[in-house]
Image 1 (cartoon, one colour):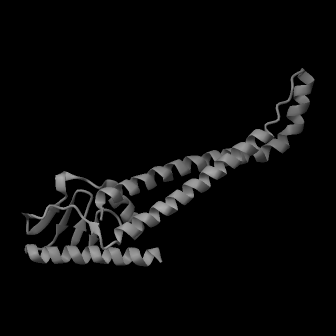
Image 2 (cartoon, rainbow, N blue to C red):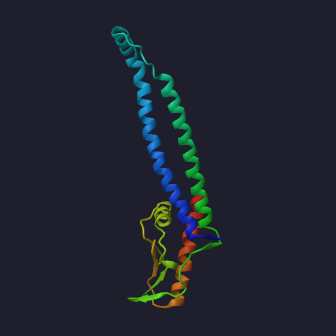
Image 3 (cartoon, rainbow, N blue to C red):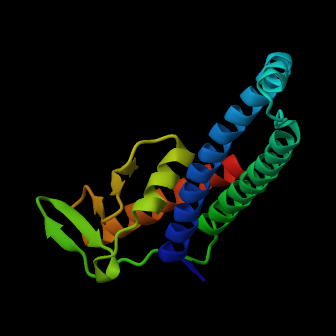
Length: 181
């Protein structure tokens, strides 16, 4: 059984890893720039150091080690993000997926709202799901608005609202199944 709490956690981890990957990429750009400049500056810097009586500190080995470290971290993070994304999609399309909404809806302004149990919010899940689907949050699928705090259906009949909710989740799962392939 998979639920939204687990998916929200996976989405949070992906977001964290992406941020860290961005930092690694920036550091790698700086190291690569220094590695490019070093051979150009070395003759001047080493001659200058010799002229003033200090030892020239060649940073080539240090920079190459730093570059190799950063590339290894980048690859590790990229793989983790890819694996977590696949895990997210796999769990989201699972027939065992549990959406933790209260079974009793709220009737409001000709619409039906389903609240998540314990007033839980799933910001990371919906932010990432929206990105995967290429849509903006909140998601609107077949007259059903899915957001991080509630699900709203544009009907006034509870039974019809449940049907539309099931259909919208099915549509999301079908789209994700296609994306996975």
